[in-house]
Amino acid sequence: MTSESAASPMLAGELLIMPFDGSSPQEQRVGWKEPWDQAVLLAIEKETGKTKWRGKRGLSRVGHVMPITIDNGKTVVSAGGDRVQAHDVKTGERIWSVYSQGEGVTPSPVLGEGLIFTSSGFEEPTIRAIRPGGHGDVTESHIAWEQTRGVPALPSPLYVKPYLYTITRDNILYCL
Image (cartoon, rainbow, N blue to C red):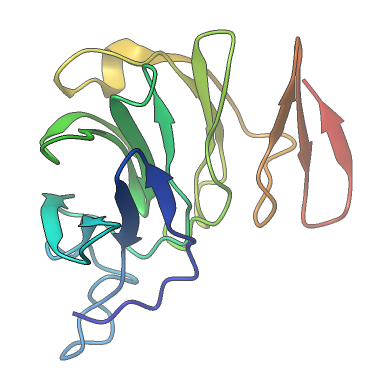
């Protein structure tokens, strides 16, 4: 597996968690233009360096996103190409997933007012407000709203109650 990822690792209790949303070393288009089934969220014990778990993403594409935790650190939410997913911090089990078309996702998700705000990657740039919870694919039931104006391509959004701030590639600041 290659990791063309520019994501930062995060600490969740005793674990260092890092997404590997790279692409196939054998076939250049796989992971970039075509979904790849080898992307993972990796959890390493910070004291020993031992792998605790590998949370499988399923079919996804390249992403560069730092994950966040919700539910008082019990759940890690990570966005990658075509996917926003929640995994159990203790086991790595994938809890829920939302389809979010686009590869090259860079902005990290933010939490505010009980919603997770994400930005999809290139192709179909969209801001999504996702209600956490559920099991399996919750795309149809857990997207509270979505918008195609003010979508950040590189910087992460900022939530300062009650507003969500974004900056576009054209350096325009949006306040939602």
